[in-house]
Amino acid sequence: MTFRHSKVSISPYIYTTAISHFAKGPFMCMILNYPAIVGCFEYFQYFCTMDELYYDAIDLLKKMISTPSFSREEHEVADLIESQMNNWGLGPMRHGNNVWCITGHDSSKPTLMLNSHIDTVSVAKGWQRDPFAATETEDGRIYGLGSNDAGASVVSLLATFRHLAESDQSYNLIFLASCEEEVSGKNGIEATLPLLPRIDMAIVGEPTSMQPAIAEKGLMVLDGTVKGIAGHAAREEGENAIYNAIDVIEALRSINFERRSSLLGPIKVSVTQIEAGQQHNVIPDLCKIVVDVRTTDAYSNLETLDLLRKAAGEKCALVPRSTRLTPSSISPTHPLVKRLEILGKQAFGSPTLSDQALMPFPSLKIGPGDSARSHSADEYIDTWEIRDAIQTYITLLDGCNIN
Image (cartoon, rainbow, N blue to C red):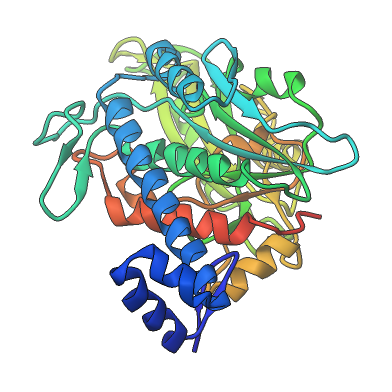
């Protein structure tokens, strides 16, 4: 057995010997001149650095929680992150409420982006704590809006960037804290990517319990209108648009897609809203529905839309609000995926949407926290999850090949 980190490998005997001599004073270690003990000093230095990164991350997270950052209202938390980056000498750049920093760029190297979002949803009903107090319990649990989704990922990835930027890597590195993720806004990552160097690979921080999501469903929201013919409810006249809509809804609910994603399973179609009628005695001539469609890599969004329109029939017009939120995936044989397997991580397909949908390059979603806590009352993150995330990110990326 050996003790390992990215730079040293030390046997238990040498490790304990070094500790005993170190306790007598660092000069004793120098006099004895054990090469392995020199390695131990690197080991101690590594953990001192890790502690600094960890405590800085915790402090920044608490400040972020204390700064409300609802989607499209992230300017104050963007100011906070930009200021902190300046304090650490990272030379931040900014576009709107998106803030990023870059290591020295070498055009001969591929570029890796570390990304997570700084916006939050609104405060859900049922909170028993102040969602902006950043309360930490004695057992190291931090409560607050955005603590889990996705403040913990933001601070962990920023800590990772700071560590990786201190040594030469085989890739260029970008850290981007983006806005408007929760609403898939056009002023977030979509507006920022054209301002960045060409990106070859991204790590997207979202709460996955530090398990890698190597595929993610896309999203289409469809507005449907089902027509009928108005008439008096007391007579046998008219054509009830609600009854027509029932047939449409049943067709959408029972649609069978021939192809199925091996990682993401079937496409999920859900009618989530319905509106019809003006008064009790008038047969409605129009019924409006809203359809939530979680797409997969088995079909493109446009192919999925075409199949849904055919299933709905001529009496229903389905209009997408957008088709730009596409499903994404990365090869299970990608070097980073294989390296995560060696670390004991289990790859999976994610049903939830992130900014991966707007990335035209390979990406991997992995971050501290649990997706089940997101958007819920009394959202929290455990501090050990942040320490574990920083260490896992560094172990994964330090000295790795991203191609």
